[in-house]
Image (cartoon, rainbow, N blue to C red; front, side):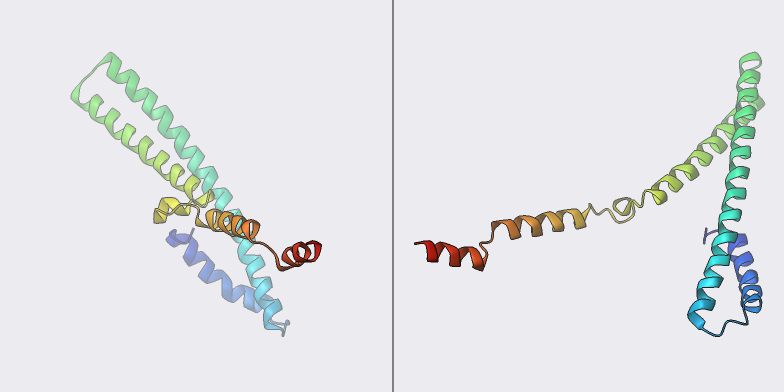
Length: 146
């Protein structure tokens, strides 16, 4: 969302209005939480509208692509082939955007940084290390029973 210049502009315009709306709150933490709440409400509404528009665009691209394919099958002229190629590029770029969204939603750090799940392996190593150590109380029990 922060890459969307229109969204950033709208948020920057919304913040002073939120500060003015909640000016009766003197505690800065409460004010900050209320501003975040308003931004969250706006962001959810903006995101839903953007997703709806993206779905409409995809539907339009798919219908145009089908028309171009039909036109090429009837008349494989240079113009029809060029239109088909342009529509295929638009379709591919749209799905590239969708795949980036899926990567972000899955929080795939390994995709961005090339790292594997280090936290998992560190926790596994700690668990195995704790399991292989002999606790002091166990040693005292062994000495006492001998």
